[in-house]
Image (cartoon, rainbow, N blue to C red; front, side, top):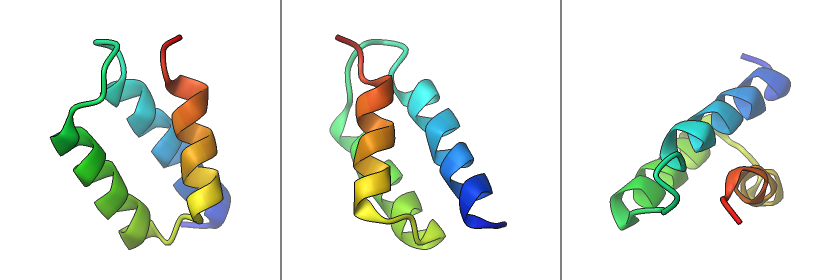
Length: 55
């Protein structure tokens, strides 16, 4: 997977995490673990999270 594909995957996963309008501690832990495994930069990870966070 190239960087763009990994970032797209993380974007989709944030969509799965946030439909209930909240972020559970277990969900955040899992997302951070995936971030590390996919070597996603912290800034990109946070930006994706904020794009999908309900207002």
